Image (cartoon, each protein chain N blue to C red):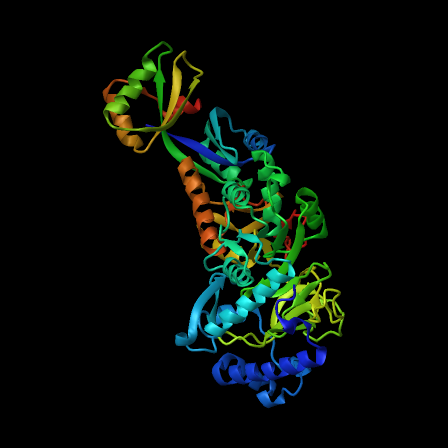
Length: 433
Length: 143
């Protein structure tokens, strides 16, 4: 079902709506966010230069580091008294990035997520279990609001504890599941161990997000569970989930372009690419009050399709994300940059400066292994010395990444040291990023 | 008298131990005793060698993470109850043993027990008071 009529308005109506909202957003950041104003002044752009939607390309690009550098409040366009919520996600190094929502931002977010749920066929007769984490992560809350808005019953199970998830799914008759695609594949393994067959569940549809999803994973999910598999897309910087979503036609993700204006750029030059070209996805938020984003570089590789969809929606569709233009990894739904890991390792005594990051899949769950060289012989006096070193590294990584990593100590001089292009990340997963 | 023990970090990879023994062999260093404790992730090799300083240098040069520690070596007669007497002494002195291992020396039928404790000098004094024969470096290294 099409939740909001705006999903099927004509291109000219959409562009008129986008233009007026873009102009408001640009005026808003010009007045309230010195960071954007300075960048615009450097480029010689003023709010009145925005005369068409295409003029968005006159504006400066924004990257994740800008959020980190202006942590925590530097990019906010609303005073604290208008902000009703914070969320955060990991930054590229050290500090997280933080975003704030006004009451209206929360309302928009809820509506966007309601469109996600509705497009996946979720309605009042559904019981939807949310196996995304709640807390500072946007995934749990965003989908919670959207699913509740369409009238389905929400089971806010949060992440983890697979046995308990399955107990709720059986006992409550859960029909929809919100999770990462790897998590549901992991659940199918737990089901096998517990002797639960797909027939014991009423699960009908999966709403997957938080990480990329190959067609092989999709086939496997459908084969193992016989459910409808829908993907949706979003990121903390833009709002969380609710940026784009698949309908049941399975032909790309519809972008909520009345709130998020997409462009595709060449990741090398920053030039806007013609319609249909593959490149890096860039979004400008059109209605965000708390922390508007001007031409935010997602680093996700995708392409846009402006053809109306067979489902009746006219909003532009983005292809499933084909990779990244940077070295970010998505591990268990969490964004992880090698630079974050490096920053943590630099604070640990007793190990060398070289490291290797190995990402594997075990029972469909991502596993992160960090290999470091032990240089401090004093630690050999007792096992406790070595164990505490490993524990310290794991603990520090957990604080920054919010995920558990396995730490392997190696002899000195065993990791590759090729100048410049040393291969620090070894990805052994079947996922695209 | 305290003797030097060499500890070597061994990552869990085949051939690592052989590299250690090769390094020592090619430097004419004789291993008097060795003991490996391992976990699933890594191992620590502890050794008594005839030339501890040279062993430390050679292993460091070969890229190993190495340390040297003072341990106690005692000679105990090879019959029941003798090890117990030594351990009782330490226990009475509230000295806890981190680990120990034993080997048979060249010159006698006595067993040589290597003991690692937190405070080796204190342990040494206690053992000597009880009349337990603490070995010199020369006796242990066999040089």
